[in-house]
Image (cartoon, rainbow, N blue to C red; front, side, top):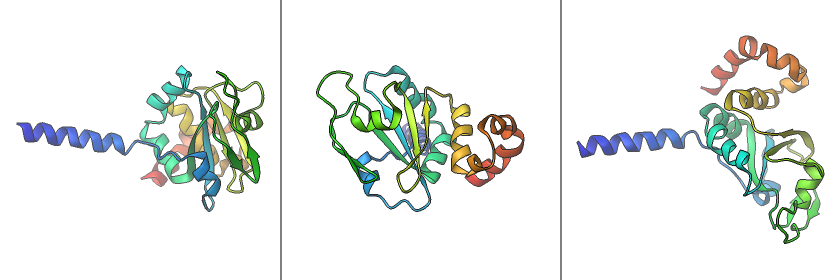
Length: 178
């Protein structure tokens, strides 16, 4: 009985481990050779409840994690952190040591009115493609991620893409992700 229970727990742990995003640091990202993948940067804060909910509900989703791991170089970045950042040839000093001070890289990417969570997609050369603010449920986030990962952002407006996704796009995406 103990062996069966242990096997069940191990199986569940392995299954949940398969639904994890392989996060990188911003330092690793600035040095990485990522080929044609896009950078995906999760700007979070330690006090943000919606950021924690994205981690728990959305980033743990198997489809979301597959898309991020396969088509993006996923980066977690503390939006109020105190690390020096070098991005796209520019140096961003650490944030001032006050509570809720935005890191200069965060301000440069998201703007002064940034909210959390927020996400940014960058081209492989480090130039900004899109800023995406707010919390998203897994099924909503899949549509958005695939829009950029597949290159469909060059073909469709996002409003139109949302309308055609389930019927015209999702079947091919699911086949690609298997």
